[in-house]
Length: 416
Image (cartoon, rainbow, N blue to C red; front, side, top):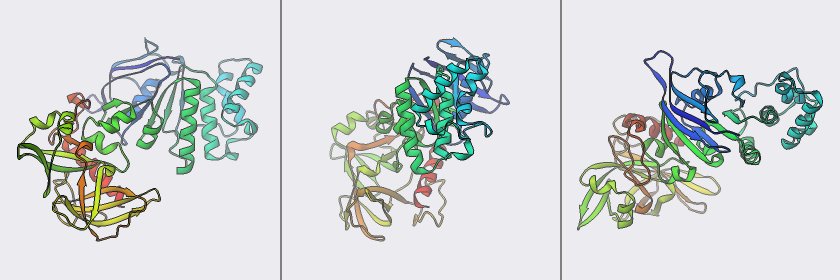
């Protein structure tokens, strides 16, 4: 077992455009760390640099405290599981699992013993004499896992190992991988673009975007205290609703105005978001999770009026897509499309999570109210959170254009 360290690691192929910029973090001995982010954010590049498949432009990578920048992959004592399995089609399952041991010169009897033990762990004992073409996708993935496990390396590196599997099998395999990692207690770095995988499997999650580390923390802390707008819109399913809001004084109280809905902020919200007082009198971005919204039939003066555009019954909940007269954070860059019926430029689609037995119909007029203690507030220019305990280095705060793209994509995916 070993710790893994990135110390101000950067990667550029032309010294002008940076794929990865000053990435710094430590994976402790036995920890399961997940790198998550959109395509092109640098997460796979980071993994390949750790494996030794990519050169490092700047900074240092250390394994068990030893600098490995120039160390060849075969001497780093790590095992990698690839997205495409990378199995030898002409070899049996047993030969695929034990090939690395054979190359290293391990005695046949010792090799067989370790292969059998690994196969039992992965429920592959009956498949040892079969070829990869005779296996299901899940079985092939387990063989790829077995090839890594049998070596007993210092660390596992996994590059989107479940992306080729169907949804049901992905759920089962991510549970198996998490269980195996904990049973083996091997330091693991796992790359995925699926935030559900990241949240359910990891001890800690590193959220990346544009080659920069946005936030590194436990899954629950990232969900509860996103450091900036990018993290807020990327983590959570359905995604957090983001609207423009004014922070004003109302009868000696601090209040928030979203569209024509104005409500006071309790002391608990102000204490949780110390940046609100400094932002008083300005426009900020406000984030509300779908499950922090109350929807009432009809129109009332003490809420935000809206009209239901889509109601999705998912069995365990109903997701209501409601058009409201409020400014979107991404209003300047948004383009109206048939898939996103926004109505007018100052309209936004809010997604609310309702109880499974909620009766709600398309075109129904409703009123929305928010739970102030569960709202998030962000600087509209930098995207930084105004909440305590959610700070991020200034260099990793995305531009509002970055956030607009993510929010628009998330909305389009929900309604497509």
